Image (spheres, rainbow, N blue to C red):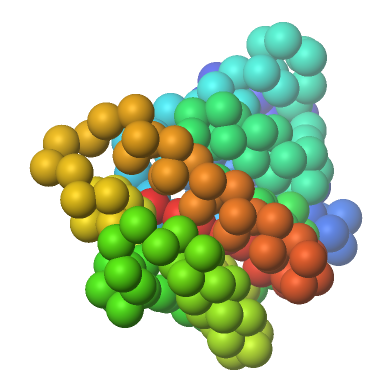
Length: 185
């Protein structure tokens, strides 16, 4: 048997094909288009940590795509990146983006019910486009505009957390968590 480089792992795909891969190439397989929207250095470190976990901590040379996906998702969530990895090795699909800054311009400052109602409607509208990745951008600016804050403060952080939690809950209630990944940045 050929000995692998220390930074490589044998990946078992769905069709049982076994392919030697670097962590970066597995990330492309797992995250697809989503990887382009995330910090490259962050992804590289997360993927290396997952590789180290399987090779050093568990002593494994072979990993299924699903196992790697779930471990990478857990690491990225621990680093504050809200993402759902498919783990299926499917071809990357469409990314449907929405700008949170536009939603806040239509809502009056301080009327959170209006903002959250618009968020739910926007998520429903975007899900109807059958995306593989649903991306909401401009969270920080949206929160600062809505609260009227010039600098980030505890109130901003609280509203930011509420928005992310609300979008996750809406995705689950609409049955979209199995169909697409959610990225909020």
